[in-house]
Amino acid sequence: MTPHAQVPEAVLSYEEALAAFDPVMGLEVHVELNTASKMFCGCSTEFGASPNTQTCPVCLGLPGSLPVVNAKAIESAIRIGLALNCSIAEWCRFSRKNYFYPDMPKNYQISQYDEPIAFDGWTEVEVDGETYRIGIERAHMEEDTGKSLHVGGATGRIHGADYSLLDYNRSGVPLVEIVTKPIEGAGAKAPEVAKAYVAMLRDLLRGLDVSDVRMEQGSLRCDANLSLRAHGTVEFGTRTETKNVNSLRSVERAIRYEITRQAAILTDGGVIHMETRHWHENDGVTSPGRSKESAEDYRYFPEPDLVPVAPSREWVEELRATLPEPPQQRIRRVSADWQFSELEMRDVLNAGAVNAIEATVAAGCSPQAARKWWLTELARRANENGVDLEATGVTPQQVAEIQALVEAGTINDKLARQVFDGVIAGEGSPAEVVTGRGLAVVSDDGALGAAVEAAIEANPGVADKVRGGKVQAAGALIGAVMKELGGKADAGRVRELIIEKLTG
Image (tube, rainbow, N blue to C red; front, side):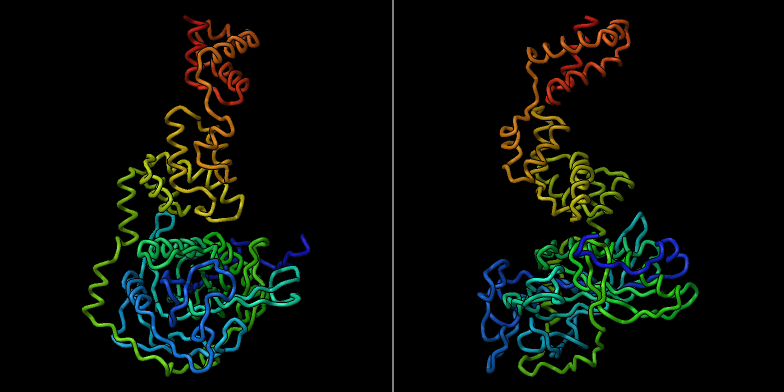
């Protein structure tokens, strides 16, 4: 174990945990909207600017400054609510959520409490051919906090750090928080259902064009609530909230770990404490954060500096007309268009590869070839690096270009894997990588003929079998030629030359 690793708590095996307990989940997904300016002021929301260069008296909470609601953010929040089959409030207000934390310069956050813009909705996700209906409690608007950077220490967290730096560029960026109702009945599939739900939301929000949903940049992040109850009981157990989980893979792993951790405590007669927890990607465990506050602790009261929001029914219906194709309908359509079997489509959904494949097909690649690359070569790389599929460093356009090179005979599938290496390493486009690394397939009959002659001479027994009519034995000679030419031979042409030479 490295010095930075967390000491894991006792856990039950996943099978033992599910044999004794039913998991109940609640997922809170925070979505940074892609508006040009912040929620209550005109500061830029562009990601990556130098610290504290995108601030003003309003988002810094200086005395005398007054907030003004971003109309585009209201529109985006309504469209999100409609896409999740929510009711849209005819009248709602912002509130002040009071707490002290260094990254909250006003010492309160402007949010919505008991009067959200959207409420009482639902959506569906599919896991292993089974559909799970997920209730949406609410989707409410708020402003994001600033960002703390803890310097020194081993973990990057405040404990053990030498000092902390604060960047308020993100303070005031528009957020929509989507909160589910308790998700029951998923059983052993609970982690996969959680992952599928967040993946569906990411796809939906991207389709709505309300957020760039970059989980690695924090514009989409999930707080995962988990409790256990003994089989045969109806009362919910005490929940924990794992904060700011920022990848699909981590959502699944965090839920799975908490099930095994809580089960071990309850089986041993212990008590689950209501608390926030931190997810540690490298170690695959959670650790305690702080005791979870209740609504009373935040002393909510209506924001006195903002008027209520009252969207007209006409405007709401106009926005409803702008909604994209519903996720489940889209999945059924693309599955039919691509002519994927039920099993093939299930694998695509489980890998979260629908968007990647759709974009690759749009770039000119066949659906089966796109599926092959995303679910094999790129999925392998994603798993090895512990990242989501779309964070492998290869774009759908580049996948389509690599497949085009294969189909043109410029490279073969084996060489294509080296092209992926070069693209990820930043060596240029697929064609530039082929040229730079000298990966083009050898198809010249002169060079191939010489290699064939050498393979026959080195393997006389195999050559005799081919001469005797056992054409399938030619595979060994083809392999020898491929080895001789570093895998860059045109295997089809090599086979033709061998057959011509030995049986012609």
